[in-house]
Every structure is written in C-alpha cells, then in structure tokens.
Length: 97
Image 1 (tube, rainbow, N blue to C red):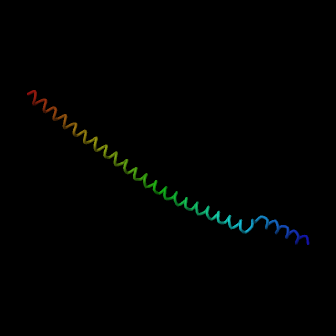
Image 2 (cartoon, rainbow, N blue to C red; image 1 turned 90 degrees about the vertical axis):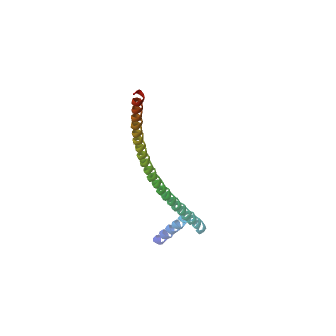
Image 3 (tube, one colour; image 1 turned 30 degrees about the vertical axis):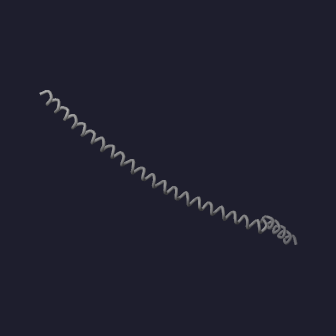
C-alpha cells in the first residue's frame, strides 16, 4: 500500500510539472518560432560572412592592382624626367652654341 501511495504521489507531482495542454501548445509554437528565427539569422549571417569574404578578396585584388599601377606610374615619371632632362641639356647646348 505504501509503494502504491508513493507511486501515485510521484505521478501527481509529475503531472503538476507539466502545464495544461493549451499552454504546452503555445510553448511549442513559441519554441518552433524561435528555432525558425534562429535558423533565418544563421542563414543571413552565413550569407553576410560569405559576402564579406568576397568583398575582402576584391579589396585585396584592387589594392594589389593599385600598387602595381603606382609603381608603373613612378617608372613612367622617371623615364619622362630623364627624357626632359636630356631635352633641356640639348636645348642649353644649342642655345649656348
């Protein structure tokens, strides 16, 4: 008798732990909505990280191209400077002759 009573008391305690069915359905709906929201956020985060990675790659490529262009421009300026210097020397010689 004691075991049966103890078991019934435990069963009552366990039943009291669970909310009514309507409340359980509401909790389940909220849990599902929360999981959907989290899944959408994870998907958006993944897409943004992917886009950021691509943007960083494009930025690195553009930076490399800019440095190459600046080096080429410096080389061209140097060549033009030597040519202008040579032309000035020739004109000085011709004018002073």
